[in-house]
Length: 178
Image (cartoon, rainbow, N blue to C red):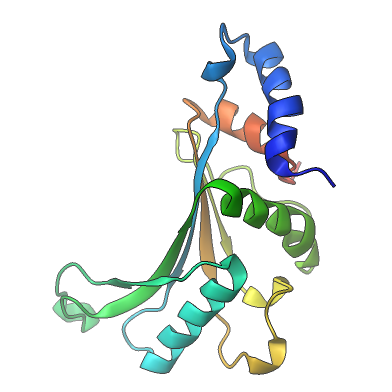
C-alpha cells in the first residue's frame, strides 16, 4: 500500500487541478493537521481522565494533553482550571499514518457502517466527525477498557470551501455516505 502522502502528490493533486482548474499546483488544498478531542465532563472521576489520556496516546502514538476549563460556570459545577478533557494534534507524517489507519482499519470496523456523513464540514473545508466507541481502533486492548469514551476527530485543510474539502478527502479515500 502506498502512503497517503504519495497518493496525494501523485493522484490527488492532478485530479483536483483538473476538476477545479487551479492555475498553479500550490493552490490545491492540503491537509494541515488532525485533532482528536475527548470531552470527559466535570462529574467524571479523575480515573476516567487518566484513561482518556492513555487511550489517545495509544491510538495516535503521541502524548495527549489535558484540556482545562477557561472559566467557572456554577450551573455545571465547573471551576476555572479544572481538567475536563484531553486532546492530541497530529501533523506531518503522524497525521498521514493516523488517517490511513482510520480510513482503512478503524472505520470499516464500525457496526452497520455505510460511510461517514458528508455534513460535518464547517464552511471552510474542515471536517469533523464523532466516534462513540474507541473499540474500533485495533491498537487498544479491549480487556483493559473500563469506560466507553467517545471522541471527535477534526481534519483541518487549507481548502477555501466545503466542496474543495470534500473532494480532497474523498480522493484520499474517506468513505462518505451516498
